[in-house]
Image (tube, rainbow, N blue to C red; front, top):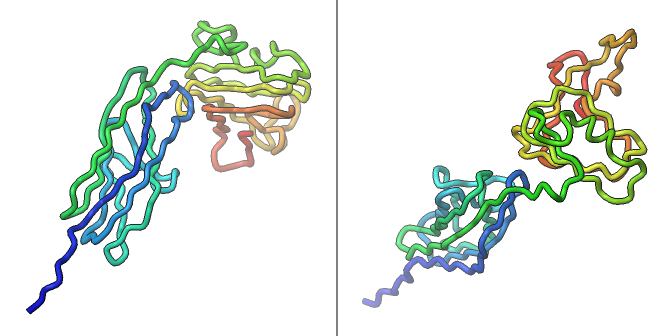
Length: 238
């Protein structure tokens, strides 16, 4: 009787991850590696540790508490690109591993390192802070102080806080860049709505905006803009 030998499950990882360098309040940089599987008998489980996350599509991210699962077809996992990021907004250094495991296969672990640094405020033209620690207390005041018809970015840093104001970027305030400390905690909020009367003038849907952008070449990053009117009547955030 001749019995064909069965090849053991095998997971192969190709990677050259460098140290992650994040800046507080900015989008976390992403690096990638590739993984393949042969003669697999179970799912490939990719588990990051610490503050690191992994993704197959760059949109849905998986953590140590909820690992990424990849299913092989007839025992084979085609070459798959895995995205990795350090997801932390606190200044410090971080380390961890990314485990690539499948039943019966030798687990391959990738060591990952990263550092989170504070943003360099010297690169901004204005700083907005509710507590008065910046150059302005309101977003509108910082915009008003910007030059008109600029041809280069006028960068305004907005510290965490809920800014209860209606903001207008006039058509001659070109190249205004609003950069928040964090999207979750830097909020511009107002509550105008269609039909609301303000100073004897009836607000319409288009004029109910919390933030009106009328100039070219403007940019918003890490800022949440909200209109808190609710379900009705009509209201606009931007």
